[in-house]
Image (tube, rainbow, N blue to C red; front, top):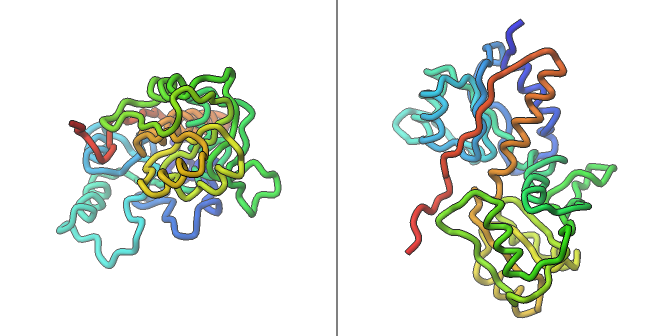
Length: 273
């Protein structure tokens, strides 16, 4: 029997339950017929024009992205707008689009688990446990320990070597010689979690999109060292995890699909002088 889009969505919803998403988020199926056959699946962080073109030109039946295409409400998807054109092209070429955003952030394993694993964190736990989860396993961010303590400079170098390269690189705030043993991580923009990071008592915080004022306040109060990476780079490690989990779960149901990870660098910044 062919694998349908409904079959794939059933697995994705089990891995990344839509009920785990934040109230403001827009997750789930954007385009596609649940009854259509799915033979090839492309995973990507962003549903940008270049990624959609990659899916169309590569003959993929399903594009699974982390970030939503239509996060805010719209009154039209006419092809006169860039996003409307994307929607039209996806439908015209029979490419389904499915989004796993904050439901994947709060999953276990999820986005921050992949980031933690990329730098070798051990004994991890959620930084922000999901209130509705009685097990304490689900939630955003992760806190863990390194296998061996490292000076901050070496820890930052480990981060740079473990994540995809971007124009931003890795920004560091703190004493270069400070010993780093315990670390909090948050895939994506993470300066809203500073209070929880302080409460966790970690030596360093790895995240993305840190702004000037929260970062300077962190330095003023001798808070954890800060390691700031590109948003896209902090979330890309989730893609291989999602791919593997989907393939394994479908195989257990007797289904197979051909999967691929997009390596297009869709970080917003592409040049640094």
